[in-house]
Length: 212
Length: 212
Picture 1 (cartoon, rainbow over the protein chains, first blue to last red):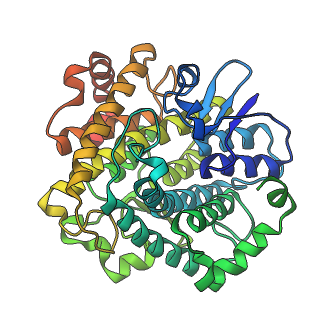
Picture 2: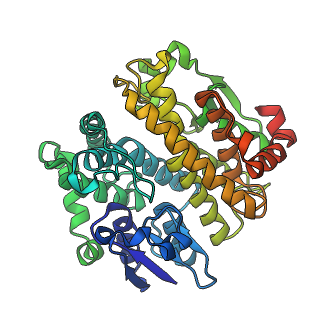
C-alpha cells in the first residue's frame, strides 16, 4: 500500500491521524498541493477528483475519500477499534461524521475557498476552475458558528462525539476544529468550554501529538 | 423501529429504496416537509438538524444521515448484501457514495435551494434561515454537468457504479439522477448513453419500482 498525503489540508490529516492511532506503518507520499501536483495528468489518472487523501492498494486500486480509506484500514487492521464495535456504535460514528462534514466542514471550507487569494478561481477542489463567491464566505462563517454551537451542546452531555469513547468521529471533529482556527482566524473553543475540554483530551493523545 | 420519511426528497428516498431492496418492513411515518413539520420542537428534540431521513430505534436512539441508517440496517439485515462483501468492495461503495454526494448531490441541491421560490430564506436545510445566493445556483448547474460527465465515464467501463454488481452506490446515483431531472429541468441521461443504460437497469428492479 501507498498513502498519498498532504500535511496542511484537513481531509488527509484525518487519515494520517487515523493511521497513527492504529499504529500501522504505511509508505507515504507527500503530494504538494501548493504546486498543484494533484492536477498533473499522472495523478488525475489515479484520482479524477484531483485530491488527496488517496490509498493505493497493492492490486493498483486507488481508494479516495477519507471515510472510505479509514473504513478499509479498520477492516484490515481491526485493533484498536475506531469505527464502532457494533451496529449501533458504527452507525453513530458514521452519523456524527456526516453531521460534522455537512454542518461543519463544508461551511469552514466555504470561508477559506471563497475568501483567500490562494484559492482564486479554485473555489472548489479538483481540476475544474470555479470563481470565488464572496457571499459564500460570509455564509460559511455563519454556518460554522451554528455548527460549533451544536458540537458544544453535544460535548456538554457526552465525553466524546459519537460515543462514550474515542472514535473516528473525534478525529474528524478535532481536524475540523484546527481547520476552523486557521480558516476563520479565531478559535471556536475559546468561548465553548465543552469543546475546549474535549479538544485538550484529544490533543494529549500520544498518536495525535506525534502525527499532527 | 420507526422510519421517518418524506416521499419527495432525495435523502429519505435513498433510505426508502434501500429498505425496499432489503425486503424489510419498518413502520414508517411521513414527515410533511412542505408544512415544515421537521422544524417543530418535538422533531428538533429528536434530530437537531431538522431533517429526514431518521430511524428511531427501540431504545429511543435516533439515527440520522442516510449512510449511517443504511449501514445500521445492513448490519441488522445482512441479506441481500448492498454495502460490499469485503473490505475493498465496502470501501468502494463508501468512496463512490462520497464522490456522488460531494461532486453531484451538493451541486444539484445548490441549484434547487438557491433558485426556487419555495426555498426562499431556506437555502440550506435545517431550522436556521439562510438567504439564497443566485451565483450558487449557477455554479451548481456547472458542477452537475461535470459530475454527470464523470459518472458517464465510470459507467462506460463498469456495469454498476462501485462494483460489478448492484450496491448502495447505485441507489444513491439513481436518486441523484432523479433529483437532477427535477431540479435542473433536464435529464442528464439524455445525452449520456452509459448513464441511460444503467438507469434503465436500476429502474427495472422490482423493489425500486415498488418504492420509488
